[in-house]
Amino acid sequence: MKRHSILSLLIFWGVHNSWTVLAAESSTEATVKAVDPHGFPRQAASCNALNRVTNEAKEISLKYVDINPQAEKTLLMVHGWPSLWHSWKYQIEGFKNDYHLIAPDLRGFGESTHPGDVESSGTMADMVEDLVCILEHAKVAKAACVGHDWGTQVCYEAARMRPDMFDAVIGTCIPYLPNAGPFVPVEHLVPMLPKLSYNLFFERMTQEAVEELSKDVRRTLRATLRSVDSPPPDEFLQQTDSFLRGWEGTENRYGSWKFANAQGNHTIPQPVLSILPTQDPVADWVLAANLLKSAEFIPNLTTETVVAAHWLQLENPDEVNAIMRRWLDQYYPPMDAPTQASTEGSPHAYRDEL
Image 1 (cartoon, rainbow, N blue to C red):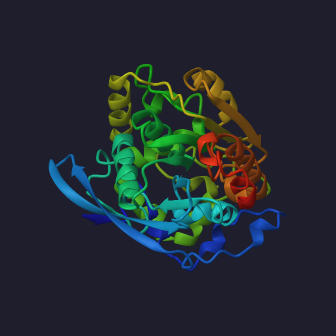
Image 2 (tube, rainbow, N blue to C red):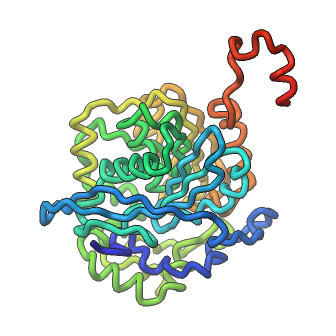
């Protein structure tokens, strides 16, 4: 089994004492607050996985942070790329007293292992199965899925595939990407979204990508984790043979599409909050949501925007947390209100709890 697998390319994220590099430049008080990554309980779930090249069944270890397990409601916080669970640090601080928080490192990220063959053994269906395994290990029957970037699409797929376990979705950074239509290769999207070019580099030159991103960990992180106030060069992400050259002068995709497209149930009926950045250098996600007709597949959708770049939950944590709090209070409050039957005969019970 591989640790720190390639598609996560999170080999360079193993520096657990360098979390301050994640803090995007911002004037908000929450952003400068230090959060100790070692201060939360860690668990490990053993989950079944498949290496599709060798057709071997594997057992992988998925590490996750488990906070306030006594709470009634659970938020499962799913990171994107390149990230680890700790990219939710400000949301963890904001909600740890009200919700049971589970924040995993996905397969191949950080200390979580991978079955090997990252090009085809990390589909959306695989990721959803991993989330289900983690929830079962934590003895959680239902949760709201909170995602960022690629993790947002994992959350949408989780809600679509397992509505019995996922009651609600908060998706940050990107909109729902329905698989209702024909498969569109990345190279066909690049003319419209040139900053998706780096995906071709990862897909076609995987080993070279590993070597480039691992060569100088600090440079890789500083090049990627940018804010509105400190943007990357315009050429960043537009090369098909390098990830970082913009700073100088997949099989998994198809497998995910094929599985979801064949299932046919592309509508997500659960309550959904979509928080989109207005200045992401990758794409105009508000425009993308309209072009993809994402809202047509989500009848109970709330959309908010934040003036931020890609890492909005780090760049503007106070605003993101406030938006989440308002929506959660309405659609997924920390505790369910007592039923009429539970308060009958005890008129002071509910008042005493307050």
